[in-house]
Amino acid sequence: MEATTAASRAAVDAVPLRANREFRLLWVGQALSDFGTSMTALVLPLALLSSGYSTSATSTIGTAVLVTAMVLRMPAGYLTDHYSHRRLMLVADLARLVTVATVAVWTYLDRLPIALAVVTVVVAQVGVELFRPSQNATVRRVVPAAQLGTAISLNQARAYAAGIIAPAVAGVLIAASLWLPFAIDAVTYAVSALCVLALYRPLRRAEAARSARPDGGAGRTAGRDGTREAEAGGEAKEEEPSGGAKKAEAGGGAKAAPPERFLHRLTAGLRHVVRDPFLRTLAGLAAGDNFAFQALAYALLLGIGREHNGAAAVGLAMSAAAVTGLTGSLIAPFLQHRLRMQTVMAAGPALAGVMLALAWYTGSGIAFAAGYSALCLLTPVNGAVFGTILATTVPENIYGRTTTALGFITEILQPLGPLTAGLLLAYLSLSGTAAVFAVAFTVLAVVALLMPSPPAVPDTEKATA
Image 1 (cartoon, one colour):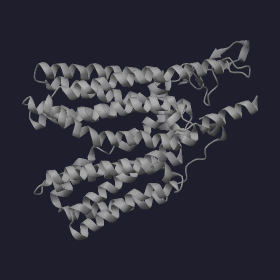
Image 2 (image 1 turned 60 degrees about the horizontal axis):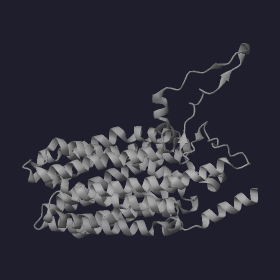
Image 3 (image 1 turned 45 degrees about the horizontal axis):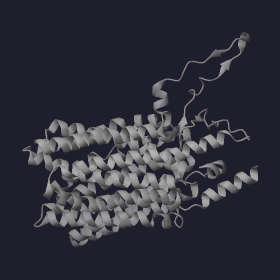
Image 4 (image 1 turned 180 degrees about the horizontal axis):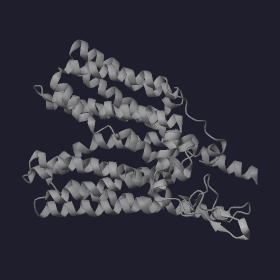
């Protein structure tokens, strides 16, 4: 029996990603959804401006997105760990389909009200926060551990590709009619929902076959922290809170301990990050990287954009950054198996620091933009490395809460990025701002080199991931 199991596992590991039906369905559905979402993000502000709203009023949709993301990030991880991934992804897709379709119809019939636009971006962000951790957990289940890095890189590549293609397509569609991009976005959500439905049928059959095995597959297998895996799709469910399933036998009677409080369960991922030295250091460093990255992006937008022909230069720089990001996603599997994790983490800030120092010395806007592109090139490599580490080392029953807690911590400083960029440019020239960023990214690169090594992957996780 053990020989048969090992042979079966080897056969699964030998299947390339392009032949992995479940991963392919998930990737195609989300590639189309990313494309539609990128179009809507560009067209929605234009629709409000064409309806006569001011730029300040239009900017409220950006604030709504940011607030929604920060409020829902950790609750979404809790839901991922306790409810069906399939249902969460379907709810996310269908809710976004309805709201975007409503916008399409309304735009076709009349001017778009700002209240509907705000509701749309809020629902869209709720969908993102629900879908993303459930998708990550699903990828962990349908892709062998040895291929997780490649799978994560391909998922990042589709987002960058959408960022390159969607603006051009949106421009063509807007020229035809303003409602068309919204209608196409609604169709992409429908396709994504169908892919999610198709994805889980073979997984259910696999679970049924496992439960029928004579070697103890009784439909559920014990998890690592008192949890068990549900049959539908194999999602991890918390059967009883830790400490709540034990019974005292004093006096011959069984007395259940009080159930664990909701807040304690909600913050399980956050507490796991704080207790783990590697994750704790990673969260702090990534928070610094994300803050500096966001500030640099706005410094590029505001600093170069205010110059003569600056809008065209900024557009070219952003397009170049999207191309380098796509390139980074494609080379990530190659680099992550050949470089130390600390080297990968330090490479992006170090290269950006060099280019920004050159921008300070020469006053070149091109060098400034090149520093931003350098970060875009290596950010997907970091994402692939860390995604693989998390997928192979974090206990499955708190995986959703841990990844969303990390996302919350690492993005908590991002709202300060635009303000920091504005203050720097208010008191310094573009070259002086480049010098500040050069120092900041150099410090981040040094800190990355001093990071502790990631935890070793448990043998059982390697075999069953």
